[in-house]
Length: 343
Image 1 (cartoon, rainbow, N blue to C red):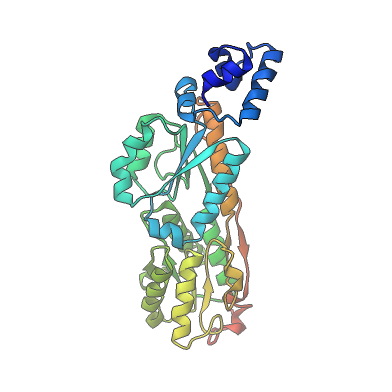
Image 2: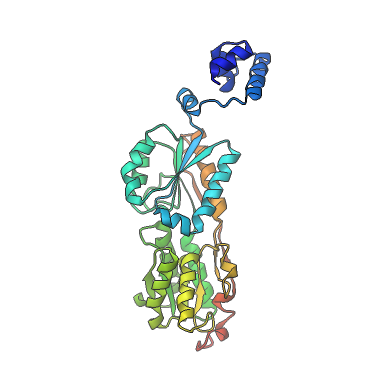
């Protein structure tokens, strides 16, 4: 059915039906109820594209994940984040369009997406440093929110956790257990989260008078296989403990350690970041930093809705809380780590 059909059944003009659908206050209440009853009986669904042209809004936001498609489906972080964004959209009568493509393709097509009139605003997850997507969004004047702070653009709204401070606290926990030779498997350094977690590791050592040894810093890429390969490079240097910049990489690191016949935490302590649902079910359960991934997705979408409602409100910066979750993998103390001296 179309507007003309609804108008005929309601005995009103097409323009009156349009005003009812768009919640125009200048419609008599009895007329509004009659039209709405016909719409309900006929199960009429307005043409969303036509409504967006008329109202200048689509009630759709874009969720951009500038990572490879394979990463999105293998890293549990992203499904949790998507659920959070979707939950906020459902609560606010919005739909979400998930934009997945290989990074280079995304960067070639960003302008088409921003100017095709299909979305009202954008949430960008896993921000890369100097990302062309962010630069294009700034030029477009479209409302957008980053998940993860931007390192140089203070005028950009974001929702993030304190990756740097949380990592520093986790290193302090390991030092408090008596470990001194602490290594790290970093996240991708072209991502602000990866960079901040490495800085937190380095600050944690420096603030406790422990020298930073470059041989104990091995890059990873936030994947399980990346964690496995990085741990293999670290093992010859005999670290007492390893801080891994994500739980997914920690799974790979744990596999590499156990394949050599070493045990965690008796011979090498291990800690991660994220507190993914599987972390407490590993053997041994993983010490890690809890970050509220689902809630972060919700808050990012809600922040975007605030910007859509008041475009002149200025940049909004939100830092979500984290928590150190202590489990068996880091060891109960120095006595549980073979060969460690008492502090």
